[in-house]
Length: 310
Image (cartoon, rainbow, N blue to C red; front, side, top):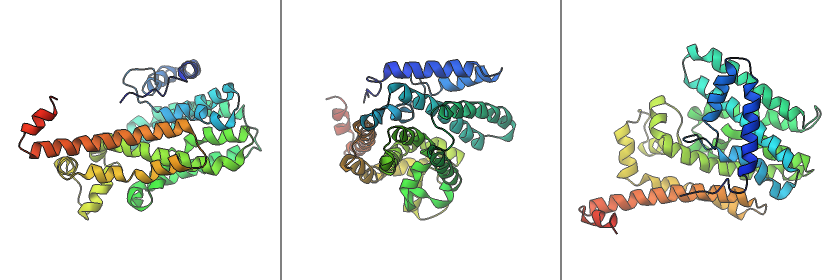
């Protein structure tokens, strides 16, 4: 399903990623080139890149209620790009052997320094913004370390969103600049519900890789809970749950509370709702297609052939 997230903001994001390239290119060698290569992995205008739309676009979506100057939205988006790169490098370090740590951690620090430079231009030292920054960093640290142990998908699935808490600096910062601090908690909740949907979609796409790397994964968590045993899952076993036992319908049902919360909230952010609903639609469509295909195959194959040629 084609999404048009960039239609209204394409020119803005062209400026954001262009500015990010200019700043990274000023890093000392070899970190400038390595930084640019890493940026390409997430640049929305590059083919085969990871499209982290909510990270880049949240500051612009917030302008439905904040009406801050577009230049400030652009700064928040740029800061979020550097912050995203920093945290993804942290994730990479956690997943790799120590031999690769030195260079990645050095690059991460350069990215983080750029992120802080941008935000220090916008918020004075006494601003409550920095307290929120610490809060979001704390949430990230706790969840990234404890997600396997706590099994957040089964125990408290809103905690899944906390791994991405630092991106909420953009929405919280925009509200502070707009003198609307009373809306911060509500927006935090809306973004958290959207981030859970995004994580559910990512975990469906990445379950094989997560299984191999022993990373926490919501879909795998659901299967383990059904099995009621701690033994490691096998690929064929997971595929059986997906394609033979209709687990994706239950998995998609777990999304209802999150999309309902966003859709029915008194504070409406239409771009965030559209983004969230599109994720929910894609999950639901895939789950239904798997179920229809399974039913068609079980009918003897002929109906399956007809269903794919009509």
